[in-house]
Image (cartoon, rainbow, N blue to C red; front, side, top):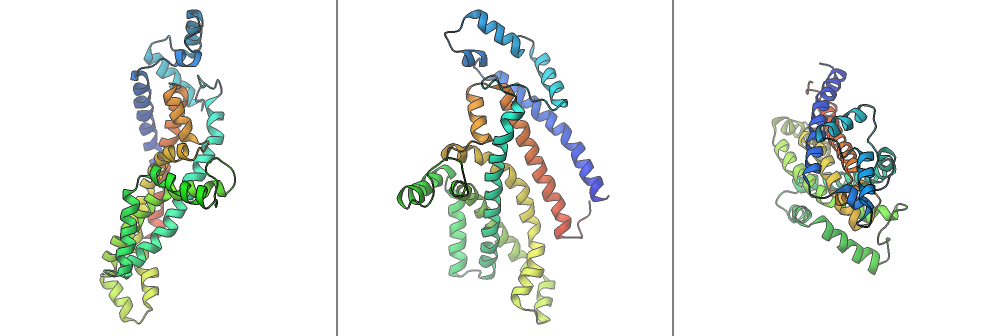
Length: 307
């Protein structure tokens, strides 16, 4: 099977998964207590206003008709209209999605940029002070809650040292603290995975053969051992995309960034069904594409992998 056939197969498999996501999210939203019309108009509106808006939004129809209506719009790439913002959901998501992808992409790059060398160093210097310090830092990264780390970085680097803005959205300075906060936990996981994977590869026969040929130890590690050790790390990459998207919800609230996460929390609180459904669908697509990218990278790293 060629890579193009594999991608087509994965895309076809993705369709029923997305359909299942729409069914689950739609069902849960309508089971949650709360009236979106009441939250949108307030308690001072008349009953006629409530009935008129409910009819406009189609909430007076049976649930199965509402779902198939949503599904029909979705086939035309129409995510509906927000009940709170009274704006097309696609336009509402466009700018905010870019902000969230900017944050998650930066966090992903930072986590892998620091984590892989740290894990390599810990594996090469196994059972030394460097190894213990590196893995101690990794355990701290896994243990520390991201929101607490965010407040800690704000207190130190924004309030006391004045190196970065406290919160908001703007240039690169506004991105550093949120990206570090979001990427720190992921970096810890990648560092531990790199160390354990590399330790398994280092003791293989072909590594001993490369050493016996007189190759430099650094060359043996970077060109021979690391490439084979990257397979589980790439697998973690596909999972990290979903974790980062979920973690961005908290980080965007802590740093007051106008992203999809803050929009989702507000939409859930206000029972803005079209926005919640649109955001959830976009996040599901992002996670699936992240896993697809990880599968494609397998063949790039290891040519023995066949589709």
